Image (cartoon, rainbow, N blue to C red; front, side):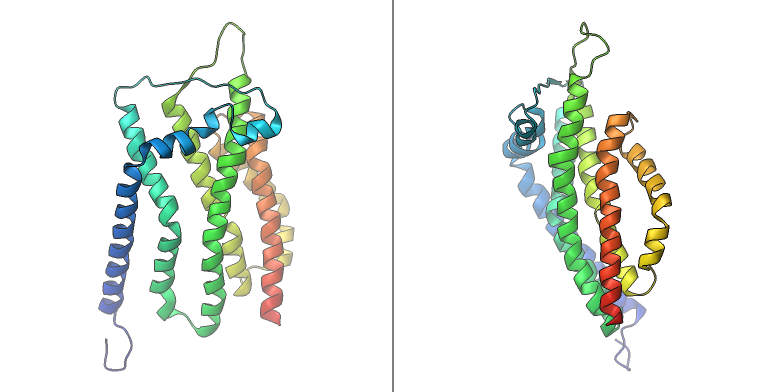
Length: 253
């Protein structure tokens, strides 16, 4: 701390080191705890969408069936480790956001603190909504489509565990991250960087961006997958326009 009471570069660096250490400690505890709940983690959560009694299939009255096989020697162990780390990240996300908020807090003015405090609190909620949408809606719909699609009745569908987990993690994490978009828009709007009119005029470009992002999320590139992923993303953009308008109105008031 300098004589004027302001934090020096080294003080900020020490705070950053402490924040990173706390995040890694909490993350490590979550990893260890989740590692020993393998049965519940996989049977009740990860592999649940591969079973015919998953709630989304019952809701759609879909005749769903899927067979998963493991074709690699170390795949199941590596997948266990991968899923453990990803689930630990999802579980500890609010704490990570809190640590980021605590670190940047001293550098903000009072007006900025009020704006960003609400945004950081909203960030965790949107992240989990995105994860839930990806897990319970988008992922099952894609599984239902691909499990029933055949180029010939003589070729049954049998899916590898690796491809299942790869699609699962990419969709769930991507939707969690992408659902943070309204938070970014709300902050930028409150600071006067983004306007309601600008968001609306950018709508045509946003549709193209959504389709490109959907194509990246779903490497298969088939029309059904693009539609399933694109619709929630576009609705998210429209929601961001509403958030932008409300945030702007609050600042003007």
